[in-house]
Amino acid sequence: MTLTYLQNVATLVLTSERCIGCGKCVDVCPHGVFALAEKKARISDKDLCMECGACAINCPAGAIMVTPGVGCARAFVTGWLTGSEPNCDCSGSSDCC
Image (cartoon, rainbow, N blue to C red; front, side, top):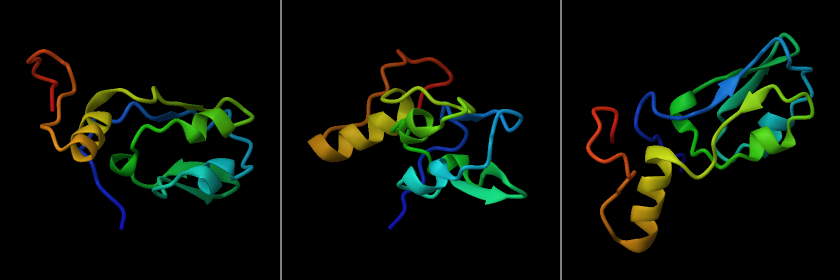
């Protein structure tokens, strides 16, 4: 089962000009966020990103940036694991989940 998080909140950024098409991001992403098309990685569904950071760590070209362990995705995962309400610690900002 693949979980979809809140829309448009993941910090994931792919710079396709830097991508060398190795496919490591496709291989390591636990939620299938990436796909290869025309010898380049592309983000197939950014809202599936849980910000684990595996893609960025394994990208030899430095084409992927993500801030692991932050934001609403982490808040929801922590909430599920602890049985508590999600808290993304954004202090009531309009960008808060």
